[in-house]
Length: 420
Image 1 (cartoon, rainbow, N blue to C red):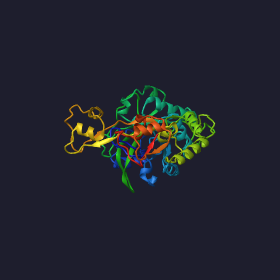
Image 2: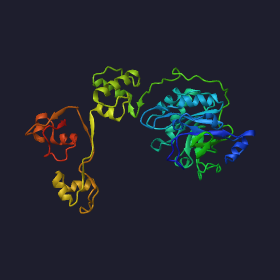
Image 3: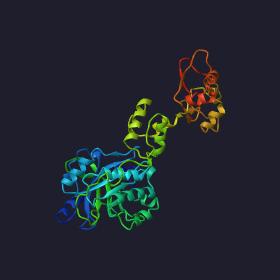
Image 4: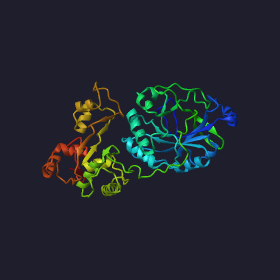
């Protein structure tokens, strides 16, 4: 897992080593003092560990399956390799999903549809560390969908730091039987430092206690975990359960990437496509998005994210215009140079004392704005003024200025292209 908003920084990876009977000495030699003879030590891993030898890891390994923290659903490129290697090595396997973006139900479907080497009892973890998207409601929506796919007894966890257990009201999550994997590093010296205190849960079952664990044959540091008895398994057999698309639709439905799928389909149809407005982001809709992106010079990825949505809805975000203060400048001189009233510049930049500006300082001349756009253009000719162009095009001077980021309507140049 990628840490950075918890009790200590972390990288994406976890693993543990089981300490029972003959393995107890191994744990002790590594500086780990187990809570009981049934405690186990392991790690968590992701692509950041590359083709790590899982045989050198602990008795359990929790592998990153994917996430949605980068704006769309993705699969960790090492997930299938890692999951199969852990299972083949006879170690306990867990799967974690890095939280993010808007729709936890669709995220749960993405996670379940991509599970590799899954067996009942494997920990299925919602990694709640992308703070913009952390909430008990989102965790429960994800958990409920995973349970609807894999059964009410699925071994579902939420991962968070001990401080985050106190930052929200997790009573409904804990009461629903969602287990806790807690991160707390103490002095983070590689040794087990004792059980952390947590809120809302009576106990944790997995404790990620350091990010600087070491194993033979691997030069990097590893997130290392201690698991209590019962952390793996849920009372079912270890028969592999097939997870197929027949269980629940694999196609995002309703909301995708934070936008209404039906509205996206309507906008595409308004551009000449012929999609069924069925609220499912299926192959036809994705193909139409890719085609639209290729024709508009957008990134062709099939995801109708913010840039594609802005283009479809005919809006454009105009960035703020700026000016860098030169030696000898005053606000009034800058206003005269740029055609923007000095009082406007002062207000935009929160300047209370007009004489307190400094060479090299960047000032906003305009604010950013979202304006309607029709993707039409006009090339400025000799003798044109913004007002004459506006009259010719049937629009207004202020709209042309806003759409094209023009701070001084009196300064336009022959040969430049305007959007209108």
